[in-house]
Amino acid sequence: LPWKRHVGLVTRAALRLILSCYTQRDPRAWHFVRNSHGKPAIPEHDAGAAIRFSLSHSDSLIGLAVTATHDVGVDVEDATRADVGDVVAIARRFFTAAEAQSVEACAPALRRHRFLECWTLKEAYLKALGTGLRAPLAQASFAWQDGERLSVTFDPALPERAASWRLHSAMVPARAQVATA
Image 1 (tube, one colour):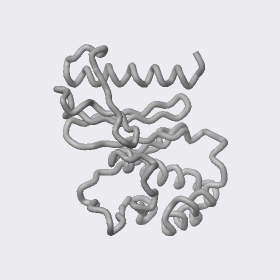
Image 2 (spheres, one colour):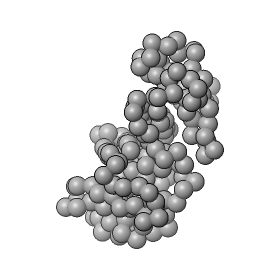
Image 3 (cartoon, helix red, strand yellow):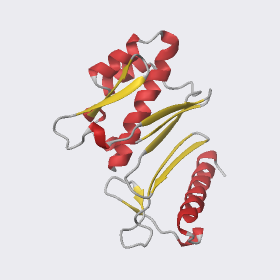
């Protein structure tokens, strides 16, 4: 099998097995639908519809977040990939001005990490909303106080409030940047 197809099969099998751990349902019995933006979900009429999940994969890495109570988003990016490009230029184009400045202000050796940290947080948040990258990346702006503590500011046109979101970002040692929302 081509590598991407193999990762896709493993991802779908893992999703079915993990969802079945929550419900005692046979993994083969799960059915999925996609919302208008393409995000997979359990159909509303399904007895397991209270379960929310989010999938992400990057090369051979797979991220899966599952919750029984809230919408959830996950993003994983392979931090070892060489083809990311000029992270400062990408940040200037897609991030808020403050986020791009945060990336640029880092020591050159740390810029890629800050870029991936911000990118995965944005993508996890947009996946939790169910829109994915079809929504503007600038509608949520992430900032780090003292280089560590994370805060988020939402576009005033959005009904979102920072207090209602739980955001987490972590580096899997020397391998991947992962974020959940």
